[in-house]
Image (cartoon, rainbow, N blue to C red; front, side, top):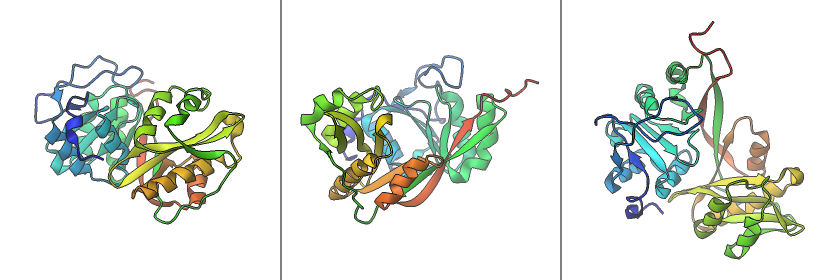
Length: 300
């Protein structure tokens, strides 16, 4: 999936290296860093993007970042040569509030953050948490930084399917059904879901001719595919999310990929679905969440 890098060259990915004169990255509203930032330095080349992909690898923890790179829908900030993997931060244009950091050096990761805007938390390797607490809190102007586990699971055994009435894979013929889905189910994600029909897998639960639950391929790499799932509030607690997620996981396995399930450590409902389908925890990352409701640094 990630072998054709020529498709990424014209996309709005931006390269950023501390070996160059630092300018900065795109300004995003409603996040940290209150001042407007200067434009990006220059577009990422095919070779540069390939080096970033090689550096972070293809793992359950990187599949979402790889999808952003594939789409050309992110900014890439790097301290030094990507091959050294000291610090790389990837910020999606779609979800600027939650950039993802990779690398071995907390100092390198922290040095990149002043050049991002729109972030409200940072997803980091567990090994860097202790060293990043103070600099991330300081950059955000917060006296307290909360921690939230980001738990990664994989499914290497056959899916434990839980059939349910009126659940099935969705295809391009279901575009009208998806487009008409209630705002409580998809919100403003209709276009992304419709695009997923062309490259991934989508399954839905249909009640009274309406889509009330769905699962889909949220991100995919050569080896892995991350699953997203949502159920309309009026239809929760009936096993529909488990049923549709099982259909998508099965389709991913038929493709020769490993299904990935990632969620926050406090999302007990999501963790239960993963367990029912046979997913096994393989690793954890951590969200660093500056607590802006606490007393700001420097104020009494």
